[in-house]
Length: 191
Image 1 (cartoon, rainbow, N blue to C red):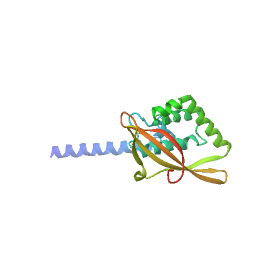
Image 2 (image 1 turned 45 degrees about the vertical axis):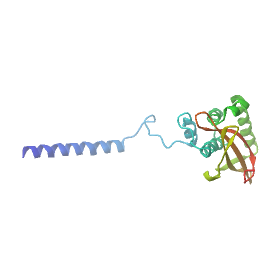
Image 3 (image 1 turned 30 degrees about the horizontal axis):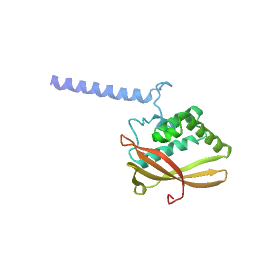
Image 4 (image 1 turned 90 degrees about the horizontal axis):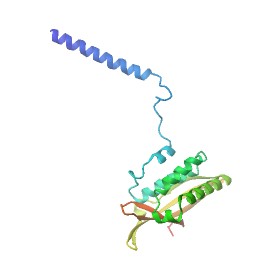
């Protein structure tokens, strides 16, 4: 009988402690440093992705991630320092030959110039899209594994809009990652 009373008292004390702690946490006001952060912004997600450990697995995913970077370039809220960090992320997706042709300082200056041109013309990248997985073309070229991905961009300029297509050539590197080797304007068929 004494054993059952002890178990009952211990159970009541434990439940009371758990319920009390729950109410304490639910009513507690957090200081600015302790406040749980809201969901990360798109900029934080893109800049926070470690492309060394978490590289996109397919050519299509590479272009989808690159498109996320492009949209952030042309977002009017993106600061200069953030643009440079975005450029660094983009260059992680580039083939060594493309980087050799566009060193970081040249690439960053080119991107900043494009961003300014967008602002001057009141342009905004509204939508980006990438072809379906089944539409990605794989080929062997000079002993290299290549992939060709078509993407389209819907851009507004003032009250008008236009849709453009870009064809990306990606080459598989030594560790099996597809990197952007080249790109060119295209039509809806990839020609």
